Length: 274
Image (cartoon, rainbow, N blue to C red; front, side, top):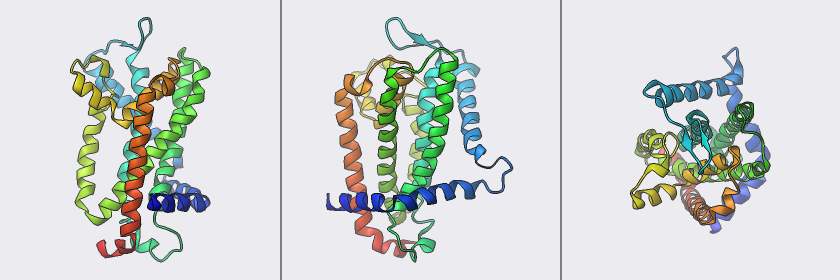
């Protein structure tokens, strides 16, 4: 836990620098584009449209998703609530996992801790996520799913999403620097992640109890269902499924502690692995 407190202190102490670097990262990627940072929103919106067409309309017309005994929602809105999380998570982990070893030579001489590197990468993607989330909320409201009292818990789930993603990015950025094959393995796993996460299909259709439990232990499942409960006004997901809440934070804290331990232990030797 000592390493976890060290890394957490560094994030708080250098938060201003993290914020500036995250904005610079976004701007530098889009300097040569006429539309600039607008492409950070345009690209994921095109992806969402493709997934909707292929999995919701193109192959076969998807039936409405039954959320409660009386509420059925169109597949597109149900998918959109999960896709907005996946697009942030996927890009953040891919870019965050290689954040240290791709910048180590440039940053090793600068006077700030290396633990902030995956943080500002994830934060940069988080700005895009907030933009997509606002667009998603507007789409929902224009189609009859209005802002409700449960939107208060959206603040909690947005924070929980960032905490989990940064914790995993911290682990993977350290491991990828030490063992470069981890990066390739991670990319292969994440390619499957979209199809084994409850984004394009309903977990409720799985009859095998063991598989159902394993999927529900996935932190992404907890976050996606939290977003869906909020956007569709289904209830206080955080308290109704309090066992999943405890499991989520237990996994997140373990990931952050493990990632902090690895990072603090090996960061003095990162330059030797490059």
